[in-house]
Length: 84
Image: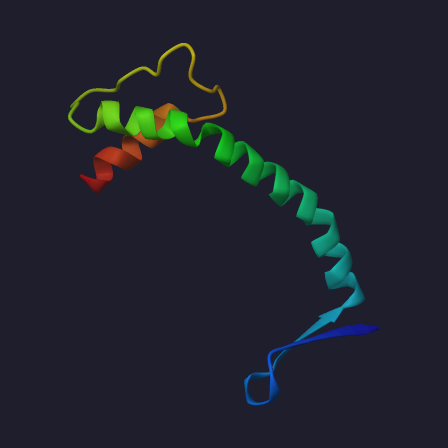
């Protein structure tokens, strides 16, 4: 079984063909992706504060105790230093 989604008007039509197992997979991972997006938006402020506080430092800066525990700050610090 195949589902066909067509978007666009006349000349700009684009079609997407999905098999049933692909639709099942997408319906399975959608709540997971939704939860990850919700967590990301929740910690965005903490990430920005940490980035701003570590831009000028040369050694690892520990996050404040109030910071979200889901952020891998040591990894974020390494990424920031690699970019600068």
